[in-house]
Structure formats: C-alpha cells, structure tokens
Image (cartoon, rainbow, N blue to C red; front, side):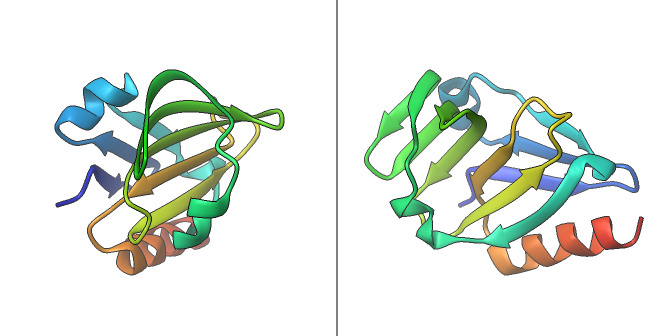
Length: 120
C-alpha cells in the first residue's frame, strides 16, 4: 500500500500522505502549481543520498517522514522503503526543493507528472 496519494489536475500537483504518514510528516497535503514542478524521477537510489537533519518528522531505518535539511536544501520526505521512491524536483519559489515519496506505481506516477508539466 502507498504511503502517499499523488494527484494531478490541469494546474496543480497534490501530494497527500496516507494514514499515519500525515501525523509522522506533520503534513496533511502539499499543493504545488504545475508551473513550479521541474520534473519527476523514479529513484530507489535515494537510499544512499544524505538526508540531513530532520525538523519536524520521523526518522527510522527505511521509514522517513517530514522536513529534512541538507546542504542548504529543504526537502519533504515520506517514504516507506526505497523500492518505490520517486523524486519530484521543484522550482526555487516553492517551500521545498524536492519531494521524495513512496507511491504504489512509481513508473506510472513519474510518467503522469512529466507528461503534465510537458503539456503546459
């Protein structure tokens, strides 16, 4: 089961943590205008990326949720394992530089995001 729902409208991308992910990440949902989305990738290699320091959120092996600060960047993470992790890169105008989330179908989700931003 996914730890996040990702929906795309004609103007916005919405990431909504599911279940306890809302509580652990201190986030009900993120709304990002599509014009501020630079792209998305399927990246199970995020396992090896430096996470930085967490504030606020949860950090357990294989389960990260919340806001992470690393090397001058601010990232939102809500993952349960890395095998279905996607990375959404955002415009500097946004609150986060990247969103790293687990989804049920990472390839399809990445394709849908990249098609939506390509269609604008």
